[in-house]
Length: 83
Image (cartoon, rainbow, N blue to C red; front, side, top):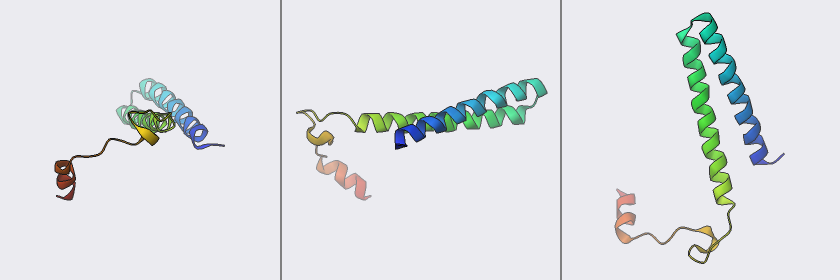
């Protein structure tokens, strides 16, 4: 199983937990359970961002960005990194 497939499985589990917790929280009138559902929703959003990063990093290299590397940083940004 590849890393992308694992992330998709984790995303599916997180979204299933969100749905279950929201249903349970609304049914039980429990704000704490709804908060837990919100926490899992944010976890799912983080996994979605990771999936987006994996897909963007797997893109083809272009002539403007050979080997899919960013352009060279200016000396000012290098100085700011050192601070």
